[in-house]
Image 1: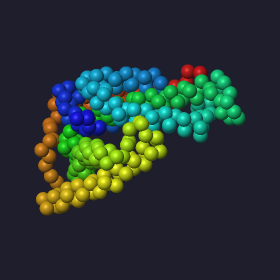
Image 2: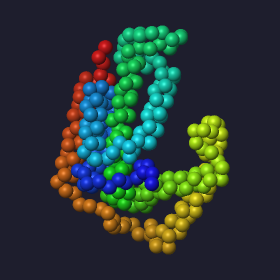
Image 3: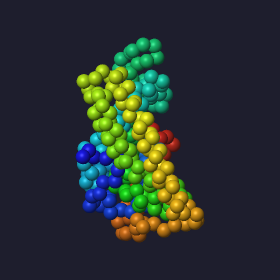
Length: 275
């Protein structure tokens, strides 16, 4: 059976043992630090740390490979768009221009632009592994309890939990419908031309949407019959108390966040300028 995309993966690792609240707080600190800084040295350090955490989590690369490939494609498109719409952004930021070669008009390739887009890429590489790890190492029910514990309404928290639980179901429905359509003669393999494959794939959407709406209706009716949302508070079966490892992780990420801010803004600029 094919692995589910972005669903909880149960492992015995230090990352899995942390509570959902801890992982949520650490992820917020981590992503905020990565988004605020443009210091290449810090981004490289955070990237290496994210790889180390990924290894500690015991999550295999092939288990999230599809998502990574999709994100890399989006990252490539994003980099192309940055250059097309602002080819001199790096020159403006770093205040110098080292032209490698000319293309046409205002379009040329400079070391400053390449360095700026390298930093953008490093931001993605720093945040993406942490985001994926947070999703695949946190049980949806515990994630909902974590959101509610930091002040999010339990109705919203439970809706997020249901959405995360529903991702594997959508994938299974998609595969089942795709196989049924292929059995009826719709070819979506590489043997078929791309426009035809896209057209055939589009024929899956209608039954997939109808199936999803039917499940949503069933879940909504079941929750309504059980009186969900009538009380102001609720208890959580999956909520876990903090352990020493949770306090240590939060303290470590808080220190890392503060050090990142100090190094980034100590000279009044977010950008590390090697030129």
